[in-house]
Image 1 (spheres, rainbow, N blue to C red):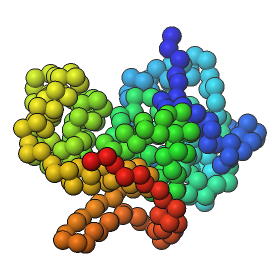
Image 2 (cartoon, helix red, strand yellow):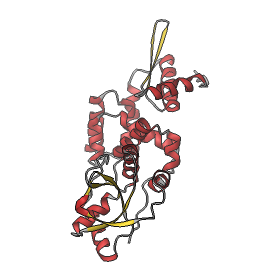
Image 3 (cartoon, helix red, strand yellow):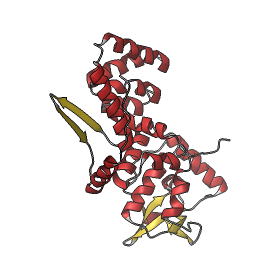
Image 4 (cartoon, rainbow, N blue to C red):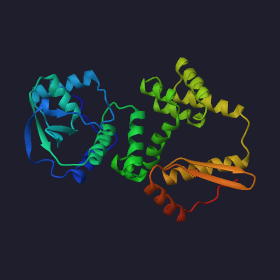
Length: 287
């Protein structure tokens, strides 16, 4: 018998007490027909086999944990426990034990994203998209995510870098044709969708493992015209700045003018960036 573990770490168990404390109290039996899905839940599909196994377990042993809901008008909106709710529906249960909590739309969305990341069998692109939304919508930092999910900061950064790849490559990953390791080998060519697609198809058709894919990419790099030391230096600065500022950075140089572009969606993030820039220390790279 396998036991379910969190995909990344503390995750939802660490977040919920700070957002909706005392979750062990006030359990009520609610009609399942009155509970609507969480509109902020980023994942819409479930593994049918896994769901049937959960339904069988609940039927045999009962529900180990209640779901968490909030009151919306005359109905209840699910916050945590979508798989449990769907499994109970498969068992044709009329009611389900639930905890009713008063939380905001933002908190509901935040919890849904973390729960999404915590799930087993979640593809790496869905994880990356959820992590990215926590950063962009809720001002999480890579350090916070690292602590929340018990992963190194570099691991979080590497997952987020996969979002730079073209959507056609994302589709291959979601379909299980490319692994996370395969996808990472393509990141250096993320600005060239045609080349990325060509390399991905070669990896898939030849059934290359990650090490073989790395050799393929390395051989292609050696054929390309080597970058000047100045361009290599810019690439190093772009990577360092992007990591330090948790956002995409572009550097353009024309004649004696240098332009640094930083992507931010909200005014607060823009101000935070300026504050951070004023105290930023970057050591020069060796040429």
